[in-house]
Length: 351
Image (cartoon, rainbow, N blue to C red; front, side, top):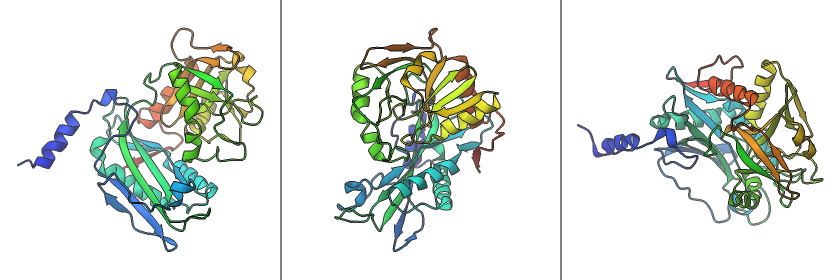
Protein backbone atom coordinates (compact mmCIF):
# COMPACT_ATOMS: atom_id res chain seq x y z
CA UNK A 1 0.00 0.00 0.00
CA UNK A 2 1.31 3.43 -0.89
CA UNK A 3 2.23 5.67 2.02
CA UNK A 4 1.15 9.31 2.14
CA UNK A 5 4.78 10.34 1.66
CA UNK A 6 5.15 8.17 -1.44
CA UNK A 7 1.90 9.55 -2.89
CA UNK A 8 3.18 13.10 -2.37
CA UNK A 9 6.48 12.25 -4.07
CA UNK A 10 4.69 10.76 -7.07
CA UNK A 11 2.43 13.81 -7.26
CA UNK A 12 5.46 16.12 -7.16
CA UNK A 13 7.11 14.34 -10.07
CA UNK A 14 3.92 14.32 -12.14
CA UNK A 15 3.64 18.10 -11.75
CA UNK A 16 7.13 18.94 -13.02
CA UNK A 17 7.05 20.53 -16.46
CA UNK A 18 10.50 19.32 -17.49
CA UNK A 19 10.55 21.13 -20.83
CA UNK A 20 9.73 24.54 -19.35
CA UNK A 21 11.88 24.60 -16.23
CA UNK A 22 13.47 27.95 -15.38
CA UNK A 23 17.08 28.25 -14.27
CA UNK A 24 16.41 28.67 -10.56
CA UNK A 25 16.31 27.01 -7.17
CA UNK A 26 14.21 23.84 -7.01
CA UNK A 27 13.65 22.00 -3.73
CA UNK A 28 14.83 18.40 -3.87
CA UNK A 29 14.96 15.66 -1.24
CA UNK A 30 18.49 15.88 0.16
CA UNK A 31 21.75 17.80 0.26
CA UNK A 32 25.12 16.79 1.69
CA UNK A 33 27.53 18.52 4.07
CA UNK A 34 30.98 18.04 5.54
CA UNK A 35 32.74 20.07 8.24
CA UNK A 36 36.41 20.89 8.61
CA UNK A 37 37.27 21.17 12.31
CA UNK A 38 40.36 20.63 14.44
CA UNK A 39 42.55 20.34 11.37
CA UNK A 40 40.61 17.58 9.56
CA UNK A 41 37.57 16.99 7.38
CA UNK A 42 34.81 14.97 9.04
CA UNK A 43 32.41 12.45 7.54
CA UNK A 44 29.92 13.36 4.86
CA UNK A 45 26.44 14.03 6.26
CA UNK A 46 23.12 13.72 4.41
CA UNK A 47 20.24 15.99 5.38
CA UNK A 48 16.82 17.03 4.10
CA UNK A 49 17.11 20.49 5.66
CA UNK A 50 17.46 23.49 3.33
CA UNK A 51 18.99 25.60 6.08
CA UNK A 52 22.39 25.99 7.71
CA UNK A 53 23.13 26.97 11.32
CA UNK A 54 26.02 29.38 11.19
CA UNK A 55 27.87 31.44 13.77
CA UNK A 56 27.14 35.16 13.65
CA UNK A 57 30.88 35.85 13.40
CA UNK A 58 31.55 33.33 10.60
CA UNK A 59 34.14 34.65 8.17
CA UNK A 60 31.85 33.88 5.21
CA UNK A 61 29.44 36.51 6.49
CA UNK A 62 31.98 39.20 7.28
CA UNK A 63 35.04 38.75 5.10
CA UNK A 64 33.72 36.94 2.06
CA UNK A 65 35.45 33.62 2.69
CA UNK A 66 33.32 31.54 0.34
CA UNK A 67 33.54 29.89 -3.06
CA UNK A 68 31.15 27.88 -5.18
CA UNK A 69 30.97 25.78 -8.30
CA UNK A 70 28.38 24.77 -10.86
CA UNK A 71 28.25 21.57 -12.88
CA UNK A 72 25.57 19.42 -14.46
CA UNK A 73 24.36 15.83 -14.56
CA UNK A 74 22.52 14.62 -17.66
CA UNK A 75 20.26 11.65 -18.41
CA UNK A 76 21.57 10.31 -21.70
CA UNK A 77 19.67 8.69 -24.51
CA UNK A 78 21.00 5.34 -23.22
CA UNK A 79 19.49 6.01 -19.78
CA UNK A 80 22.88 6.53 -18.14
CA UNK A 81 23.56 9.54 -15.92
CA UNK A 82 26.62 11.53 -16.95
CA UNK A 83 28.44 14.28 -15.06
CA UNK A 84 30.54 16.60 -17.20
CA UNK A 85 34.20 17.19 -16.21
CA UNK A 86 33.73 17.23 -12.44
CA UNK A 87 37.51 17.00 -11.88
CA UNK A 88 37.93 20.46 -13.39
CA UNK A 89 35.29 21.86 -11.04
CA UNK A 90 37.10 20.28 -8.10
CA UNK A 91 40.39 21.86 -9.20
CA UNK A 92 38.76 25.24 -9.71
CA UNK A 93 37.11 25.17 -6.29
CA UNK A 94 40.50 24.52 -4.73
CA UNK A 95 41.99 27.41 -6.71
CA UNK A 96 39.23 29.56 -5.23
CA UNK A 97 39.99 28.18 -1.77
CA UNK A 98 43.64 29.09 -2.19
CA UNK A 99 42.72 32.57 -3.39
CA UNK A 100 40.65 33.23 -0.27
CA UNK A 101 42.83 31.25 2.18
CA UNK A 102 40.21 28.58 2.83
CA UNK A 103 40.81 24.90 3.47
CA UNK A 104 40.84 23.04 0.11
CA UNK A 105 38.34 20.22 -0.42
CA UNK A 106 40.06 16.92 -1.29
CA UNK A 107 39.08 15.64 -4.74
CA UNK A 108 37.81 12.36 -3.27
CA UNK A 109 35.53 14.22 -0.84
CA UNK A 110 34.25 16.40 -3.69
CA UNK A 111 33.57 13.27 -5.76
CA UNK A 112 31.88 11.39 -2.89
CA UNK A 113 29.64 14.36 -2.11
CA UNK A 114 28.72 14.79 -5.78
CA UNK A 115 27.86 11.12 -6.31
CA UNK A 116 25.92 10.87 -3.04
CA UNK A 117 23.74 13.94 -3.65
CA UNK A 118 22.99 12.94 -7.25
CA UNK A 119 22.00 9.41 -6.24
CA UNK A 120 19.89 10.65 -3.33
CA UNK A 121 18.00 12.95 -5.71
CA UNK A 122 17.97 10.69 -8.73
CA UNK A 123 14.24 11.18 -9.29
CA UNK A 124 14.88 14.85 -10.04
CA UNK A 125 17.23 14.20 -12.97
CA UNK A 126 15.28 15.47 -16.00
CA UNK A 127 14.42 12.87 -18.63
CA UNK A 128 16.44 12.69 -21.83
CA UNK A 129 15.08 14.89 -24.58
CA UNK A 130 13.55 17.57 -22.35
CA UNK A 131 16.42 20.05 -22.70
CA UNK A 132 16.79 20.20 -18.92
CA UNK A 133 19.54 18.91 -16.63
CA UNK A 134 20.33 18.42 -12.96
CA UNK A 135 22.38 21.37 -11.75
CA UNK A 136 24.93 20.54 -9.04
CA UNK A 137 26.04 23.38 -6.74
CA UNK A 138 29.06 22.75 -4.47
CA UNK A 139 29.66 25.49 -1.88
CA UNK A 140 32.57 26.10 0.50
CA UNK A 141 32.29 28.68 3.29
CA UNK A 142 34.31 29.89 6.24
CA UNK A 143 32.11 28.81 9.17
CA UNK A 144 34.56 29.55 11.98
CA UNK A 145 34.10 32.69 14.07
CA UNK A 146 36.58 35.56 13.70
CA UNK A 147 36.16 39.26 14.41
CA UNK A 148 39.59 40.35 13.23
CA UNK A 149 40.28 40.09 9.50
CA UNK A 150 41.83 36.64 9.26
CA UNK A 151 41.05 33.22 7.79
CA UNK A 152 38.68 30.95 9.68
CA UNK A 153 39.82 27.76 11.40
CA UNK A 154 36.61 25.91 10.51
CA UNK A 155 34.91 25.36 7.14
CA UNK A 156 31.73 23.88 5.76
CA UNK A 157 31.51 22.16 2.39
CA UNK A 158 28.02 21.53 0.98
CA UNK A 159 26.49 20.28 -2.24
CA UNK A 160 22.87 20.64 -3.31
CA UNK A 161 21.14 19.93 -6.61
CA UNK A 162 18.07 20.89 -8.57
CA UNK A 163 16.61 20.40 -12.06
CA UNK A 164 17.06 23.44 -14.31
CA UNK A 165 16.19 24.66 -17.76
CA UNK A 166 18.19 27.14 -19.89
CA UNK A 167 19.98 30.00 -18.09
CA UNK A 168 18.54 32.52 -20.55
CA UNK A 169 14.83 32.13 -21.25
CA UNK A 170 15.60 32.32 -24.97
CA UNK A 171 17.54 29.04 -24.77
CA UNK A 172 19.87 28.55 -27.74
CA UNK A 173 18.63 31.70 -29.42
CA UNK A 174 20.54 34.93 -30.07
CA UNK A 175 20.35 37.63 -27.37
CA UNK A 176 21.32 41.29 -27.11
CA UNK A 177 23.89 42.59 -24.64
CA UNK A 178 25.44 45.92 -23.57
CA UNK A 179 29.03 47.05 -23.21
CA UNK A 180 29.40 48.89 -19.89
CA UNK A 181 32.27 51.12 -18.83
CA UNK A 182 30.91 52.66 -15.63
CA UNK A 183 31.11 49.38 -13.70
CA UNK A 184 33.89 46.83 -13.19
CA UNK A 185 33.36 43.18 -12.41
CA UNK A 186 36.84 42.59 -10.94
CA UNK A 187 40.24 44.25 -10.68
CA UNK A 188 43.25 42.78 -12.58
CA UNK A 189 44.99 41.60 -9.41
CA UNK A 190 41.79 40.84 -7.50
CA UNK A 191 39.53 37.78 -7.45
CA UNK A 192 38.22 37.76 -11.02
CA UNK A 193 40.07 34.53 -11.85
CA UNK A 194 38.41 32.54 -9.03
CA UNK A 195 34.75 31.67 -8.46
CA UNK A 196 33.73 33.64 -5.40
CA UNK A 197 30.49 35.42 -4.61
CA UNK A 198 32.03 38.89 -4.48
CA UNK A 199 32.60 38.86 -8.24
CA UNK A 200 28.90 38.29 -8.82
CA UNK A 201 27.83 40.85 -6.22
CA UNK A 202 29.93 43.50 -7.95
CA UNK A 203 28.26 42.71 -11.29
CA UNK A 204 24.68 43.03 -10.04
CA UNK A 205 24.17 46.76 -10.55
CA UNK A 206 25.33 46.67 -14.15
CA UNK A 207 23.37 43.49 -14.89
CA UNK A 208 20.11 44.65 -13.34
CA UNK A 209 20.30 48.00 -15.15
CA UNK A 210 20.97 46.17 -18.40
CA UNK A 211 17.95 43.90 -17.87
CA UNK A 212 15.78 46.94 -17.16
CA UNK A 213 16.93 48.45 -20.47
CA UNK A 214 15.93 45.31 -22.38
CA UNK A 215 19.24 43.45 -22.61
CA UNK A 216 20.03 39.90 -21.52
CA UNK A 217 23.49 40.57 -20.15
CA UNK A 218 26.49 42.91 -20.07
CA UNK A 219 29.95 42.84 -21.58
CA UNK A 220 32.59 44.07 -19.14
CA UNK A 221 35.82 45.64 -20.36
CA UNK A 222 39.19 45.37 -18.65
CA UNK A 223 39.15 47.43 -15.45
CA UNK A 224 42.53 49.05 -16.03
CA UNK A 225 42.29 50.57 -19.52
CA UNK A 226 38.70 49.95 -20.67
CA UNK A 227 40.09 48.91 -24.04
CA UNK A 228 39.77 45.14 -24.08
CA UNK A 229 36.94 42.63 -23.75
CA UNK A 230 36.78 40.87 -20.39
CA UNK A 231 33.86 38.81 -19.04
CA UNK A 232 30.42 38.55 -20.63
CA UNK A 233 28.23 38.91 -17.55
CA UNK A 234 28.50 35.60 -15.68
CA UNK A 235 30.14 33.86 -18.66
CA UNK A 236 33.20 33.86 -20.92
CA UNK A 237 33.16 35.61 -24.30
CA UNK A 238 34.16 33.99 -27.59
CA UNK A 239 34.16 35.02 -31.24
CA UNK A 240 34.48 33.34 -34.62
CA UNK A 241 36.48 34.82 -37.52
CA UNK A 242 38.39 33.29 -40.46
CA UNK A 243 38.01 29.75 -39.10
CA UNK A 244 39.39 30.86 -35.73
CA UNK A 245 37.88 30.45 -32.27
CA UNK A 246 38.95 33.59 -30.39
CA UNK A 247 38.51 34.20 -26.66
CA UNK A 248 39.91 36.88 -24.33
CA UNK A 249 43.10 36.45 -22.34
CA UNK A 250 42.88 38.28 -19.03
CA UNK A 251 44.00 37.77 -15.42
CA UNK A 252 40.56 38.87 -14.23
CA UNK A 253 38.52 36.31 -16.19
CA UNK A 254 37.22 33.13 -14.57
CA UNK A 255 38.58 30.11 -16.49
CA UNK A 256 35.39 28.56 -17.85
CA UNK A 257 35.32 24.78 -18.10
CA UNK A 258 32.84 25.11 -20.96
CA UNK A 259 35.18 27.49 -22.78
CA UNK A 260 38.08 25.10 -22.17
CA UNK A 261 35.99 22.32 -23.72
CA UNK A 262 34.88 24.41 -26.69
CA UNK A 263 38.50 25.25 -27.49
CA UNK A 264 39.30 21.54 -27.69
CA UNK A 265 36.25 20.87 -29.85
CA UNK A 266 37.16 23.79 -32.13
CA UNK A 267 40.67 22.38 -32.61
CA UNK A 268 39.18 18.97 -33.33
CA UNK A 269 36.97 20.62 -35.98
CA UNK A 270 40.08 21.99 -37.69
CA UNK A 271 39.82 25.52 -36.34
CA UNK A 272 42.66 27.62 -35.01
CA UNK A 273 42.26 28.72 -31.39
CA UNK A 274 43.45 32.12 -30.18
CA UNK A 275 43.43 33.18 -26.55
CA UNK A 276 44.50 36.82 -26.55
CA UNK A 277 43.54 40.37 -25.70
CA UNK A 278 40.61 41.49 -27.84
CA UNK A 279 40.24 45.24 -28.49
CA UNK A 280 36.65 46.48 -28.41
CA UNK A 281 36.99 47.75 -31.98
CA UNK A 282 37.56 44.20 -33.22
CA UNK A 283 33.91 43.41 -32.51
CA UNK A 284 33.13 44.93 -35.92
CA UNK A 285 35.18 42.23 -37.67
CA UNK A 286 33.72 39.07 -36.13
CA UNK A 287 31.43 36.70 -38.00
CA UNK A 288 29.86 35.25 -34.85
CA UNK A 289 30.06 36.06 -31.14
CA UNK A 290 28.71 34.38 -28.05
CA UNK A 291 28.91 33.76 -24.33
CA UNK A 292 29.73 30.37 -22.88
CA UNK A 293 29.49 28.74 -19.46
CA UNK A 294 28.06 25.78 -17.56
CA UNK A 295 24.62 27.29 -17.11
CA UNK A 296 23.91 28.22 -20.74
CA UNK A 297 26.61 26.20 -22.58
CA UNK A 298 26.57 28.68 -25.50
CA UNK A 299 24.44 31.80 -25.78
CA UNK A 300 24.68 33.28 -29.30
CA UNK A 301 24.72 37.09 -29.43
CA UNK A 302 22.83 39.03 -32.11
CA UNK A 303 23.55 42.57 -30.97
CA UNK A 304 26.11 44.34 -28.81
CA UNK A 305 25.34 47.94 -27.92
CA UNK A 306 28.13 50.13 -26.61
CA UNK A 307 26.15 52.00 -23.97
CA UNK A 308 28.59 54.90 -23.81
CA UNK A 309 28.83 55.90 -27.47
CA UNK A 310 25.76 54.22 -28.98
CA UNK A 311 27.73 52.04 -31.43
CA UNK A 312 26.02 48.78 -32.39
CA UNK A 313 27.59 45.54 -33.54
CA UNK A 314 25.14 43.21 -35.29
CA UNK A 315 25.32 39.45 -35.84
CA UNK A 316 22.88 36.58 -36.52
CA UNK A 317 21.11 38.77 -39.07
CA UNK A 318 18.73 35.95 -40.04
CA UNK A 319 17.65 35.63 -36.40
CA UNK A 320 19.38 32.30 -35.89
CA UNK A 321 22.67 31.32 -34.24
CA UNK A 322 25.67 31.24 -36.58
CA UNK A 323 26.73 27.94 -38.19
CA UNK A 324 29.99 27.55 -36.23
CA UNK A 325 28.38 28.34 -32.87
CA UNK A 326 25.60 25.88 -33.69
CA UNK A 327 28.08 23.15 -34.59
CA UNK A 328 30.10 23.75 -31.40
CA UNK A 329 26.94 23.74 -29.28
CA UNK A 330 25.54 20.56 -30.82
CA UNK A 331 28.88 18.77 -30.46
CA UNK A 332 29.29 19.65 -26.79
CA UNK A 333 25.66 18.88 -25.92
CA UNK A 334 25.95 15.64 -27.86
CA UNK A 335 28.91 14.55 -25.74
CA UNK A 336 27.12 15.48 -22.52
CA UNK A 337 24.01 13.50 -23.52
CA UNK A 338 25.82 10.45 -24.82
CA UNK A 339 24.78 11.17 -28.42
CA UNK A 340 28.36 11.78 -29.56
CA UNK A 341 31.53 9.82 -28.89
CA UNK A 342 33.25 11.08 -25.74
CA UNK A 343 36.67 11.03 -27.39
CA UNK A 344 38.10 13.43 -24.79
CA UNK A 345 37.03 11.31 -21.80
CA UNK A 346 35.07 14.16 -20.22
CA UNK A 347 32.04 12.29 -18.87
CA UNK A 348 31.81 10.50 -15.55
CA UNK A 349 29.01 7.94 -15.45
CA UNK A 350 27.08 7.53 -12.19
CA UNK A 351 26.47 3.81 -11.66
